[in-house]
Length: 189
Ligand code: URA
Image 1 (cartoon, rainbow, N blue to C red):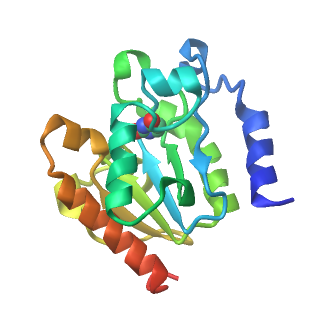
Image 2 (cartoon, rainbow, N blue to C red; image 1 turned 30 degrees about the vertical axis):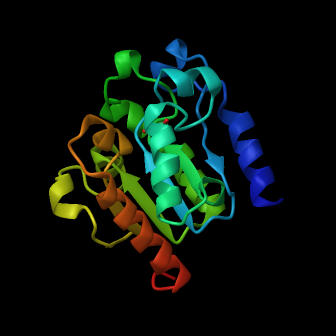
């Protein structure tokens, strides 16, 4: 089966997931989208209202900004794979609980196994805690390379931080450019 077919089957097997309480409140499970053979895998937090309605990741304001920041870094959104640490919307957009992230973890790991990215870009602290280190502080790890099991991990901010004004857009653009350059130069193969 192709990566696309494997992902479609994974979605079909999980779209009615009730492994944690978030399943009961969701409209749609937000599985992820993008190039199923991408070397770059963008990992966010959890869906918001618009994502929950459409079933697509990063389609709200933070998502529109993400698309722009990627473009400024020379990356077409369609060329990367984008998903969240948690596939269902937490009530009132609270951060997902650890047990909810844990319930979603096998699905994320299977996505990574199918896509085989060179780099997983962890956008924001939820993604960093989920994939890299539960105790990390974003200021300490952002912009550095870490070894994952079969890929590199590159922490950066979540685009919502740019919307809030706590992070400058150019910092994220620089991070995305570094990731694209590293992948093109096969530095992280
Ligand atoms: N994670 C996010 O941070 N946002 C989304 O839209 C989906 C997953």
